Length: 256
Length: 323
Image (tube, rainbow over all chains, first blue to last red; front, side, top):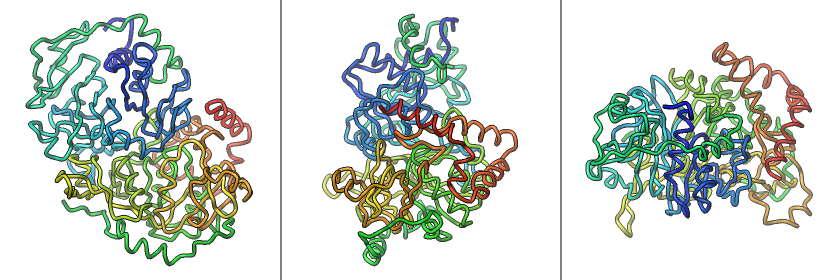
């Protein structure tokens, strides 16, 4: 990685590029919210953010970024405050195109664990905060994009607990469980972009960032990865993207 | 899949309806003291807690419940913040039903959550955010469950005891999210008249559903309205008086949590609280309880610990964000 940007900035910029104009995105606080706000300012002016605290269309105030999805800062200049249950019901109805997610543990089928480490849910080795809205985003959005640091301890062959389901065990198991829509399309990491094989639904390398490599991605992943027929290289964040992003978080609350 | 915690009484819509039929649904006066309102909570009750995380938490009521040393409570709240930590550390709650618990991302995974749940002292029953919202909504609607497309296929199904239902029309499999009828709802609102007609500004959260789902409803309000004000703007009433059992006038009733448009959450207070836990472990919450809960006899004494300057600053910040 060059000195022009840090890992959080890279993640936010690459994640922002995944969003199209005239769509809607479910975004949590932190880097995902910055990514959505950057996309809206830069290339997707008709993008609408939906936030799980029950917020539609906020305009995040630079320097006053929310630390929770349920506080006044998250709903700054919103167009509607429908309440939490109804915000998710917009997603269940099919109105939310993209859901951004993070995760403590991610497996080769894109399933996420944010609940417990250890084998026994009722007596966990480590109790994590829980799903929040992650399970709902994973179940209900048309498409889910995971945005995360790429670390071997995070990318595990099998998660201890499936909090948020993606492709479950692959080969049609998602649909068989009653999850008729959605699923994780991409995993944007600090090393590259991962996708999924359309049949087996196992994770594969789609792109590397400039300065990383397929080998580096493999070395930082706890399971074997497939490889797309042609692995692309992403464009590094431009000065313009970085400037707009940094203006959103002058306190460096989430950009580090 | 068997679940040790989902209790059939939670979704017994027939018994829940009978309880509402049997109780007074008065259009009369509801104003009372915090002590009297909190005394409606009994040991072992399940409490539906309004607000979300550090937004519009009914902290004045919760503090009074702790002062009355209730035991064996279940807290049901969509996102649980440090009020949940206080109930765990005080030995008041043995079970927490929630989608997420910690204070907020900058303060990391709650060490108190870890301490009490990893040791098995408190059971944390995890539902997805929407599923818990639908549990309250099913309760509010008086039906035993609502069909939904969420929570399916995940390991939450097993730990929550969620069942599925086959759609009789299309044959598809749906989640059958069970109703939740809390014994008592605790809700903090912006304004209410003395008959308990309530108005909420900003985020509605799940409060109106929780109030309708519960058997007993306790309200604190920042401001008491005249009856004339209620009647002039009836579209603003989100909880009608006949649902409400007790109402207390408590300005800054969520502090140091936020109340939309009135005061912002005090992040510095959270940072001090977490620093004490980092330094001294779970016993720091015990010290916090002594200082903020058991010590000050009244809510006004409690607010004095923060001081008018701090509260005034948080009020100014709220106006800036919502004007």
